[in-house]
Each structure stands twice: as structure tokens, then as C-alpha cells.
Length: 261
Image 1 (cartoon, one colour):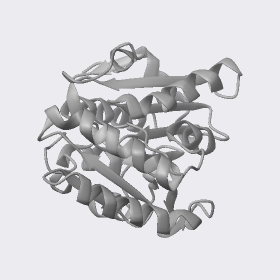
Image 2: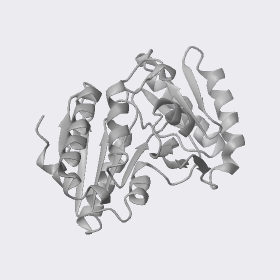
Image 3: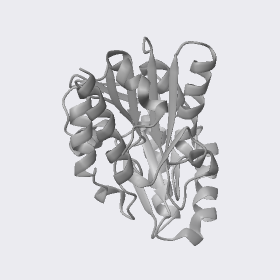
């Protein structure tokens, strides 16, 4: 594989480059059961090689940091979980204090969702977020969204549909992958984000804004293509065909950086 010209700055400015990766659909293939999602071994290898070569390697996901740490056991990477409500660096996990008052309402909403949606998976992500999945019953998507919207109104929480075939119940705290990208790229010369779904678009938008403002000299949106990917993902600066192709691309980045060193 020839390294795309858009990623050449990661070779020239490796020590001041930040690589940010989505998990589901990017590091790991999409599966029906979220608990069964597994990082591709080639992806784990690529991240392990890149971590000491780049200024920062981070995973930015709707998953909890505990799940991410177990799935991607690579020392030194930054983990941003629950779309930024959790952060883990150097083995220390912190939680956005603005989310803590919402633990009770989230638990109540989770109980109500389970009662209202028998047969659908209501996934509790720690005590801060709940995801209602309808991948195995796509005909119930409207029902799941309607229940989530009603619970959001009842408990004063948010109910965005960020992922594929799922809707989330979460604290009304203004964080998303875009806010995380702005924080984690501070001081970087080059930054890239790889993602596959609508929840990743705020990260793409943040990169564009940072580049236009001159905060980043080089910003690269890497779209991980699939049959379900929105058009904005397929219009990214660099597009790869699924997680295996993303792993191969990152391996090429690592090889290029090592050759230059």
C-alpha cells in the first residue's frame, strides 16, 4: 500500500501528530451483540507500534473506558469513553463531574426502557449512559426512538441517535467526539480521526474547523467505509474499506515513520 499524500505529514511531524480512532466499525467490525465486539489483531498491532512513534494515539468511542482498555491493551494510549464523559490516561480514569448528578435519572430511564421495550437490548454503559439497540430488530427502530424521546423528556436527559441501529440515553452534558478532538489535538501539528458512522461526524467537523483556524497545519478525516456508512463518511479525505483496510493503512503509516527515523 502506498501511503496517501494526506498522511505524509504524520511521517514528517510524527512527534507532533495525533491519531484518533473510533472503536466500533473502525477498530472492531460491527457485530449484532455489542459485548462480542473484538478489536482486530492487526489493529491492536498497528496501535501498539504507532503509540511510541506519534505524539498521541487515542481511542474516542461511545464505549466505556473499561471496555476499551480491555479490548485494546496498549500502554500509553489515551481512551475517551462515552463520547467524552470518561477519560483514561496513564491508567487513571476520570469522569466529567457535570455528569455525576445524572446517575439517578439515567438508572431510572434504563429501568423504564427495559420495561417498555421487551426483546430489545438495553445496554447499561457503567452508570452514566444507556444504549437501546435495535440491530437485531430493525423494524422496531421507530418504537425504540419514540421510547427514548419520551424518557428523555421525562428525566431531563438527552437521547441522541449516534450509532448504527441504536439510540442513547445520556446526561445533558455538551460533549461529543468533536469536543474531545479539540481537546486532544491541542499542541499538535497534524491530526487525523478515523470513523465510520454519524457519531464520528462531529470529530470530522472539529478537524475541519481547527484546520481553517490555523490551529492545525494538517487535518485528515479518514472514513471507514461500509454499506451503512453515511455519505459524509464516504466523502472523507481518505477512505478505506472497513477495519482490515484501516489496520493496513495504519501499518503503512508506522512503517513510513520508522523508515524516516
